[in-house]
Image (cartoon, rainbow, N blue to C red; front, side, top):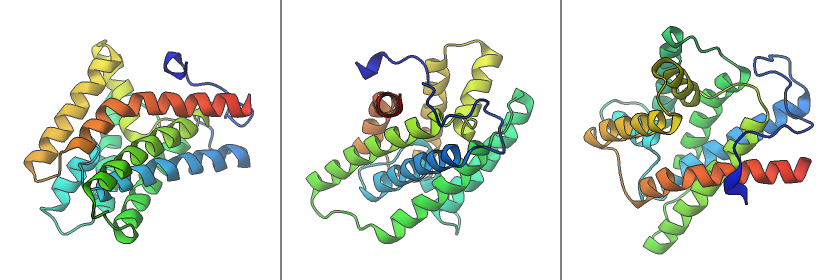
Length: 215
């Protein structure tokens, strides 16, 4: 049922416009909650040691070649992606800025405080939980309607410029960054595949749960 969702639902705490820098407390609260879950899931996937999401593979690969944490690299990648927004005509929203900061912070906290399970099956279980967590967090933050995250904005901007299907644009982006990250030494594994194929349905589940809970 939730797989049929085609648009982001609006609930009572959704912002009326994406470029709202003075949102209601409830809107800001749920936006931050969603981003915390999103970042937590990204961090748990790295900790599972079964592979990471494509953009985290890139951050991981770069961090192996410079003396910076994966969270810091993630933040720097987000800033670099935002620079690419300029020629694409994309606009910043509050969630754009919060996304870059909160996700990077949560990734570093996970790596520092969450141990990798010693059993491979527990690692796989953690990977599954992490993808679900990212999806639900993504659904919550999208419903807040405070703007797109850096990578989502890049995807939308490229789609408008190229007029290619959004699924193809996203696939090209994900494949490109994971290839570069893998070349630099980032870990690509079953967790990466779980993320690639599972994130769409999990975000749809997050949107569905928010819609059913608050409407």
